Length: 168
Image (cartoon, rainbow, N blue to C red; front, side):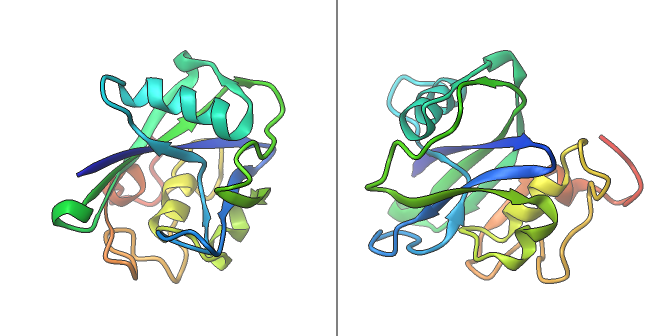
């Protein structure tokens, strides 16, 4: 099983996304949260800090990071466990420091996430679950948060909500 972390940097009602190159073997030509593989001996938070620095050139404030949820995709050798984190504070201005992996980065309004091709459709619901947004715990019409079109199962705060008016 592969263990991966991704981080949601949120600013002014937008989240920073990276666009995976069309030539990537896995999940080509889609938008994703920045992140990558957890290396042997690393915690998810350590890997998150390393990946945000390598891919975006920012230093995250570890105390500001909180887990939004977990995605599970694939099976057997191809199984992937993705820890999705919110990063509340960071130092530096994000730039694309991994052009071999991403051909673009962009701040995307939360309301526009549902219209983008995302690695995992449930990412939009996870980001919508952030307390900063009035649309917290709402799902886009096209997103089934428990399973998306790539058969990705999620265990996220947005999925756990039964009362759409509640806040976490």
